[in-house]
Length: 317
Image 1 (cartoon, rainbow, N blue to C red):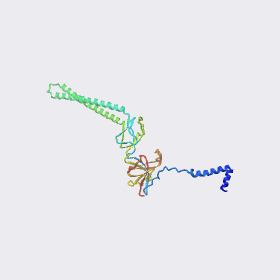
Image 2: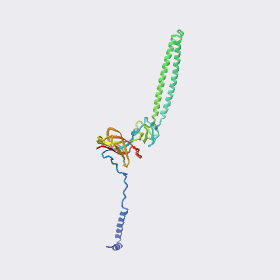
Image 3: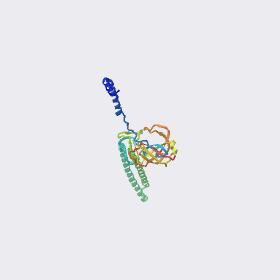
């Protein structure tokens, strides 16, 4: 059948004409528009491979060299103001959270007045003791018979009484000073201060919230991030192959071109249950791991405490 015959047939049969047109259109669409483009891969690079011929593999987690410190409160109270934000650098002793301290402040003022009153009492007792002692010295210097023995004895008793009162007032002053020191220490606890130099990692509290004695969660987390440490978890079956002097390197997950040279810090000699790092940190398996702490020798950008790393430790065989 020639093309001329097909055209003649199309003129005579409308249904056949529509079928042929539809077939041709379908073929053209399939070739031009019907091919689905491939979506770009979310994996920027292939997983890292070991640079060593023989190695131990471990899962590493970046942490502060001071460990990640969960800061809590000595005293219950209402948060007056959070003085830091995530990412702030702080020095040891810098204020980070202020609690409502009005009651504690008033108690310090009261105790300061008590101390001043006790100091005045000591001054009075000291003067009375000096006066009584002077009278007794004068009585003893006089010739016999000028004063009766009863008068001399009275002056002796007056001196002893004044000395006892002086010692009592000094004791009360010391007690008042100790109470003032305690009040100031309690007041100082209402301002939480940084326990180490470092960076604020996460703040969990807001102004106006109440902290009770039963509060379990930390108020904030911080740590010293210079240098960073890596906590590597190796399987207990590989522990016998580990050598502290061996080379170790960590690779950032998602980009195997970012490698972190490591130096050994310590091994924690207690095997713990292996945790599947699924986010919740509660999934347990029946194997145990040994934790080895390394120091990151470089200062790469855009890595953060808490990130996971692939750690490779060289072994001889």
